[in-house]
Amino acid sequence: MRKETIAVHAGYDGDPTTGAVAVPIFQTVAYEFESADHAAALFNLEADGFRYSRIANPTSAVLERRVTELEGGVGGVCVSSGQAALNYAIANLADHGGNIVSTPQLYGTTHTLFSFVLARQGINVRFAASDRPADIAALIDDDTRCVFCESVGNPAGNICDIAAFATVAHQRGVPLVVDNTVATPILLRPFDHGADIVVHSLTKYLGGHGTTMGGLIVDSGRFPWAEHPKRFPMFSQPDRSYHGLVYTERFGPRAYIERCRSVYLRTTGAVLSPLSAFLILQGVETIAVRMERHVENGRRVAEFLKADPRVDWVRYAGFADSPYHALTQKYLGGKATPLFTFGVKGGLEAGKALYDSLRLIKRLVNIGDAKSLACHPASTTHRQMSEADLRAAGVSPEMIRLSIGIENAGDIIEDLDQALAVAVPQAERAPALSAIA
Ligand SMILES: *Cc1c(COP(=O)(O)O)cnc(C)c1O
Image (cartoon, rainbow, N blue to C red; front, top):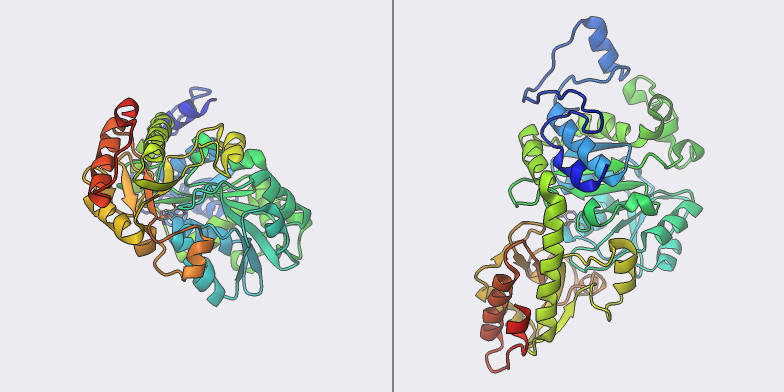
């Protein structure tokens, strides 16, 4: 079944391929058992079903299945935010004494989670010198529990060579974890290129309307945990916290994701509300159509900015002179994401003046909304980082990040044009504004 159809079949859990009858969805905290034996089978994880909403919920389960299907995985777990998804995805692999190897270009809060929160738990995060596969490979050792990257970095806009990362990780018996929030499974499926685990902020394009927080972890089912019992004893050795359960034996290819639910979601409880799952499912219904418009509008706005003499630089992977142009062709089918950055001439002060003059484009820190959004990373999302870390993450002081929405492209361009006129008052305007708009 094609992505557009998978995405639209939301709200009920009927199987669109067979026409199987749909299960009605409602909200409750706990679920009735048929008998004591039925309850015992559920608690032993021997029967599929629902017990208590902290562990699993039928509405959230529809969302889990829908995005798992879009990504081509074997199972997913919804959580309350993208950050909770990242925390659980890593916690399920690494504990005290382990390390993870990451690209330096990361979402700001993920950088903070890795550098400070995980570090205090004894998990050492090694940031590679760049997103080149050789720089990743150089840091992997016997204590490495995963390689991590964002398929398309937020806000740097870099595109990772996922197939090459998977090769260097798998050569050392290590899984590749990919945050696929910016690309979305509509533009890119990391599992098709060898990734093992995918993480999403559902808050962004999948929800798509800037109303609802959510996160999700998806398992490809392909990493051979049982072949690496020293690195990953938790999957193939008895779990004392769950009366000796062996995840690889009980769940086969779903060992990773079921442990994530049974250990981390069950005991630490960053649960997605089922009402939020319902709202995000409505976004998922239209994501395939929205992404087409996001991508096309992004291209038109990037071309306008590039042609404008008031603009110093535009970092857009769709341009032939972008260092990521070839990877855009390989991984995104040439469809550069509508999340990109630019710098106005005049440095920090002109950048702030432009930012303050926007009318249609909203000044806020979110991405993937139907509405166009702008953010100034140096004063917001990346504020906690040192100047050296900012540079490594690809963030400069004047940089503005745009998340281009699905409005009329001419209206978005007109807003940028009037804001540029305020920021750089003496300069000429774009020669080709009317032709582009
Ligand atoms: C927003 C974002 C996150 C965090 O997601 P929340 O839902 O805000 O917690 C993680 N990674 C990337 C790439 C993001 O854009």
